[in-house]
Length: 267
Image 1 (cartoon, rainbow, N blue to C red):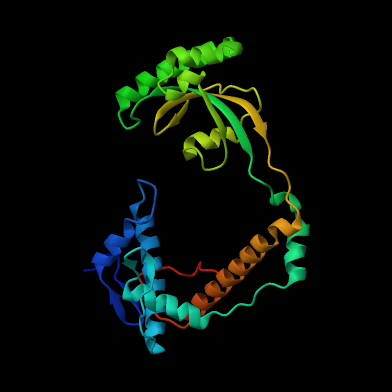
Image 2 (cartoon, rainbow, N blue to C red; image 1 turned 30 degrees about the vertical axis):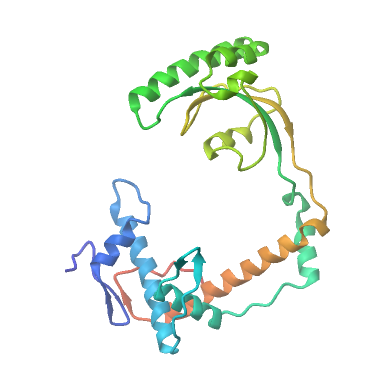
């Protein structure tokens, strides 16, 4: 049953069950005091999904589920939507001059990954446990002060206080690249200069860290020949995304929809 706050979602006469809206709402974030924002996002997503399925069936497409992971196949609806988009959206591969022009526009965007030589002191805790988290934070703050006061003593401090196995190497983690550490930890590495120690403890899923950047090797700008295939793929994907948005916009323009707000969908 609809309410004034959460009306029924109706797409070309087809009512989307409230149970589906409830389930989809769990996939969208919203401020704690504005749960209706997540509901609105869910309604918009399901309205577009309904439009695509309706169009696939209007065209008489048959679902042919593909294997998307070992022993995991698409649902029939997922297969129908994929089949529709494959049929409706045709893009051409970018020409060589277009690829080169994209590189020339800003070659510095295409760089080899940075490499970091890093040491740290870990004050381990379960971040979900508030008491343990605050206790470990207090300890990490004290160790941060000691490390900043006497940077040359960092390795010795790590070897006697860290909860990480790297303590046997004075806290040294060796050479790290993007993806080699948890995101919370890596985010800090992008901000540190060579020789710098974090002025505040850094929280990760493992606990609090005092981090020292021992050395940095910034990525170098890559030559065109090394990245032209990467650029071609990106341009083709962007063209496909643009065409998909335009296709969905046409379906929306021709549809009768209530219970969703799709005016903001890009044309």
